[in-house]
Length: 164
Image (cartoon, rainbow, N blue to C red; front, side, top):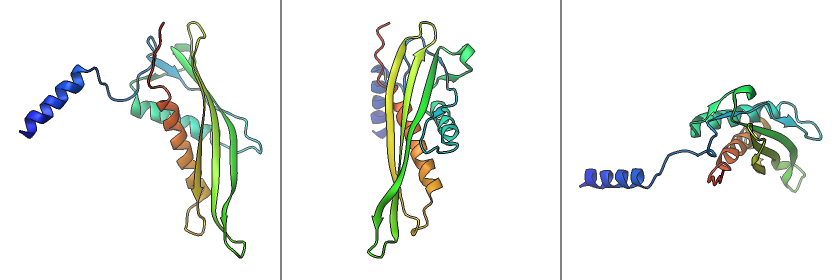
């Protein structure tokens, strides 16, 4: 009985056109992801490299897109780290910081190479809190928010409706 239910579910999924992962616009099988620009003020060193690596990793994990150089790409995903904020969220009565937060905002733009058509343009942001007294570090919080923003950037690629 379980096998029959499993097979029925499998047939329904295959029959309805379901595919795992994210789809790209028609005609886009390869993407270039140049290093993101860093426009943070005050300047947050190296976040653009960490974010670029995370986006490429998410493409590899969640899509069947081929990551290539700009010369061989059907589309180019450009990104800019617009903002990096760090602040105190919770203070104890004696002024000890209990919880801090960081916020990162990133602009992204996917452009088709053959006609320079902008396929997608968004701003993605994430907020993460951490507690130094609990043993959490800002470095771990930055890594967490970078991973989440990378996931959101890839998720923005679905659903596609590209009429051309």
